[in-house]
Every structure is written in C-alpha cells, then in structure tokens.
Image (cartoon, rainbow over all chains, first blue to last red; front, side):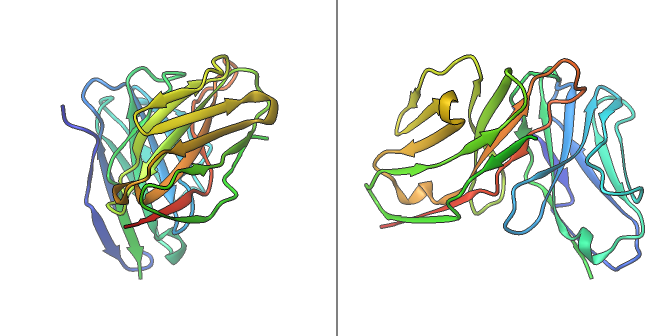
Amino acid sequence: GAGVSQTPSNKVTEKGKYVELRCDPISGHTALYWYRQSLGQGPEFLIYFQGTGAADDSGLPNDRFFAVRPEGSVSTLKIQRTERGDSAVYLCASSSSGRFSGTQYFGPGTRLTVL
Amino acid sequence: AQKVTQAQTEISVVEKEDVTLDCVYETRDTTYYLFWYKQPPSGELVFLIRRNSFDEQNEISGRYSWNFQKSTSSFNFTITASQVVDSAVYFCALSEANLSYNTDKLIFGTGTRLQVFP
C-alpha cells in the first residue's frame, strides 16, 4: 500500500513569510508525528497527534509553529513569520495504533529553505 | 534524561567487509523501545528494526544483525559482507513506554554515515 506522503517536496520562501507543509499518513494510521531534521543531525520531535488531537506538542520550538489534523488523517504544519533558522527538512511519520505501537513509518520529507 | 549517542560520525569500508555501528542510550525507564533506521541519499528514513527492553535476544535478518545489551545500555548494529547499496546514514533511536507520558516520540542519535566502496 501507499506510504506516508508529504507535499511539497521542496519549499523555498522568504524570511517573514507564512508556509504550510502537508502530510498524508498511511491509511488507517491513527498516530501522526512531525519531526525536523537539520543538516548533519538526527530528526528532532516536534508534535504528536493521536486522532485529531495534539497529544504532545512539547517539541514545537515557539508559537510561530502550529499543526492541525482536523479529520484525523491529513495533517498540516504551519509556520508563521519564517526565519532563516527554520530551514531544515520536515519529516512526517505515522504509526498504526499510537502509544507504544513502536514502529513509526516516515515520509520523504519537505525541504524548507528560508532565504 | 533520555539520550542516544552514536559516537561514530563516519565509517568507510570496502565492499565485503563487516562493519559494526555503535549505539549507546540513556533512559530513566525500565520499559522502552530501541530502533534503527536507514537514511539513504534519497533522504527517506527506512525502518530496520524495533526491540523492546525486555527482549535482549540478538536478532539476525539476512546480512544484518543487532546486539542488545542492557548491562552496557548498547544496541549495536552489524552489517556482514557490506555492499555498496548499504551506503547511507544510519540512525539509532529510543522511545520510552511510560504510561505517565502522553507520547511515544522517538529520540534519535546524530547518525553514522557509512560509505561502502567497491
């Protein structure tokens, strides 16, 4: 079946602009995660959804970052007033049953470049 | 504190050599999960293995094997008879399974870049 998909694959924006990144999880997966990966680093957790609700948003760096999952499937990560430091690859992952399900399957990521 | 350390930043080997990637973790919990992911040049993280903290049995899958030792908090990954297609960045990750936490986020190490030369 289809894996996790993310759009766009690349996004170039200017400092101060607003961006939205989209994630389509594996069909039927209730848990969805966003991570951010900077060059040469491992992915860092941003936010976790169980169904429609954000169960853990402790990784969001500041209030410019926000994510939604209104129908418990597709999720959108929103970044306001982008800064050059936001440049990174944003990864989405999903798993079948949420807490302690263990296996998160990742999408190909969105490479965000803030000029 | 939860932490994953992959001390080897980069390893280069010649095809058919065996190579071991090290992973050391820190956790406050007795129940947790450990993972390895592969990130080829295309960028997508590919799941390789998941182990829970109560299962210390070593695992073998083809040319891949994993050695889990709770006594040293290590979860090392060995590739036998390496191939050029094994070239990638490999990440070790930890997930704590504590009911008081409302999350099972992954804590990743910084990765080990493996280059296999023909």
